[in-house]
Each structure stands twice: as structure tokens, then as C-alpha cells.
Length: 394
Ligand code: PLP
Image 1 (cartoon, helix red, strand yellow):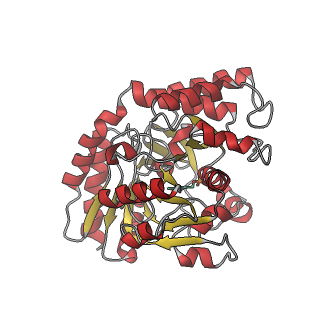
Image 2 (image 1 turned 120 degrees about the vertical axis):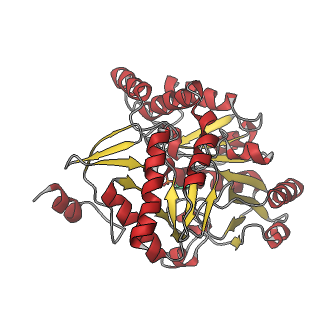
Image 3 (image 1 turned 180 degrees about the vertical axis):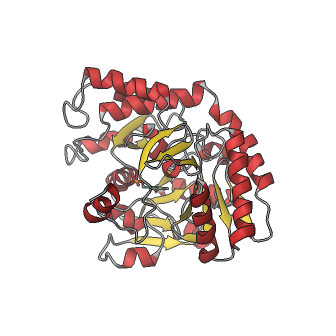
């Protein structure tokens, strides 16, 4: 059996139609398949490869760490330099109430940890989340997920979680003295890059402060320069009580984090002790890779180029069949009239060597979230192929 046949036989699938590209190499913003075909990567492993694939500093950090040690002990017991240095580096770029970093293996685990933290800190269970939000696929995170189709098959889920539309003032009214937390994305990812209104976020923040509910911002996709600022919440001017990170956090290695005030995080050490544990969370190789990626992102000033690249794309993505383009930095949802139209464009692009995708709750929108390091010429070429696809297939 060839690789493709073995893939379909033995590698578990939950997509009815996986891309099934046999990738053999990835560099910067280009993927290479087993047939020698090149793809411009317009999705960066879904907002992971912000500084591109296999950045030399990341590879070097991984090599150095593998020479030193791999896993040595479960989370939080040993002083592991990659964890310590990365937590301190993140803290340096975060407000003073976000200084204690709990590293996890994934974004979903960061969400789970934050949900437990909110319960532990407040002694409450009610949670508020938003329709069309995505926070992960584990059962707690799934309970927050804002789509009944995806939730319903897996009930019973966590009780006392209430969903509202983004920007609906009813969500603010629902925050009360029973509420443990409000969980929201600073830019909704899977609804196709949708920004909440500023006034709405401010009202949520105010009500959380008044009632003692924790405000949890999920920047698992929005973080690390994606929107043109290191953190999307900096643009809003609202500081959360807990920040969720993942995706680009690991520089291409699996890593997530929930970050909060030390006085709150410390409560996970007591009643019960070891209130949240993980064997591999904050793996030293992942933290070494993540730290190298974080330093490269900042030192090489990739975030400074985001706005210009965003404008380049916005200027080029004009076509009568494109209904709208929603953008937040180098992160876009290109809206078509239907999911069928979007799929036709995605397939055409794949054939021409451009990798894009759709969004979980917006299958009629084409996903663009390339490595921030993508060369402008690659962006121009990809954008020209998108409008060409519109001409040819729609
Ligand atoms: N939160 C957001 C906004 C995400 O986009 C994702 C993943 O796509 C997650 C959480 C879950 O992260 P992971 O897939 O690493 O569990």
C-alpha cells in the first residue's frame, strides 16, 4: 500500500474530505509535496506558522534542547530553563495581572485549565460563551463552543453554560453574581474573522469587574501578531483576567497556555493540591521552540509588516463574486455567496498550488492566515490566483 492508502486506512479521520497532500517539506511560507509540487501556504497550519515553517532559530533551539534533555518530570516540579525563560519572556510583554503562565499541550487544554481556574477562584459554575465561538474539541471546551450542530452529538456536556450572540447586550445582562467567567475570542476565528464591537467588549469587562466574574480572552488564533499587534486585546484597550494562548505559541511545536494573576493561579495548589496537572504540558522542546519563535517574531519585526501586507491583499481581492472581505491584520475571511462557491475556489487554488481553507462556522468564507513572514510577491501571486479562480469556476 502506498502512503495515501495507508493514511486512509490507519490514520483516524474526522473530515469526510481531508486535503490528503503528502507533504515532504515546508520552508517559510511554502509547502512541498511528494510529487515535487509547491504550494503557497496561505493558512500557516491554521494560524500556527506565524514566523514561517522551520525558522532556522526554531530549528536550532530544538536541536540544542534535544541535546540537553527531553521530558524529565511532570509539569511544574522541575526548574526547566525553556519553560522559565519563555514564561518570563511572555510576562514581559503582558500586563501586570497576567504574569503567571500555565503551559499546556494544546489550545483546548488551555481552555479547560482556565474553566477550572474560574470555578476554583470564584466558587461559581455559571459560564457565558458566544455563538459561533470555538475554544477546542475536548468536552469542557466543546461545552463553550457556539454551535448546536457540533455540540448536540456529544451531550451531556457541562451544565450552566449560556450562549449569546456576539454584541448582544443580553450577554452583558446575563453576567451576574453566579457567573464564574465569560469566555470570548478577541476576534472570532471560526465564524470567519469577526471582530466584536468595542463598546460591547468594554461593557462585558465592566460587568465582569462589578460581579467578580473572570473575563477570559481566547487569543489562541488572534495572538502573536496575527492582527497586526502582538495581542489583539491591546487594540481594544481591555485587559482580561485570563488569557488563552496556543497555535503560534509553540513555533510549530504543540504548546498552549493559560495565563493569569499569580494570586489566582496559586489557588490551583490548594484544595485540592495539584488542582491541575499534566505530564507533557510545557514540554522543554516545545518551550524552547516557542521561545525562539517568539524572539524571532519580535527581533525580526515581522508584526510591523502585517498592515502593509493586509492592505496588499485587500487591494487585490476585488471581484464581482466576492461578497465581502473581513480582515484583522494578516487574517481574512473572503466571503462568497455559498459554501459551494467557496469550495470550488479552494479546489481550483489547490490545483494551482495555493493552500487555503474554509471556516468551521462559515463554510462560505475562504480562510487566509498565512505566515506573517510571507513574501509580498507570494501574496500577490496568491491573490491573483484567487481572482483567477473566481473568473474560471464561478
Ligand atoms: N481556540 C481557538 C480560537 C482556536 O482557533 C482553537 C483551534 O483551532 C482552539 C481554541 C483549540 O486549540 P487546539 O486545536 O490546539 O486544541
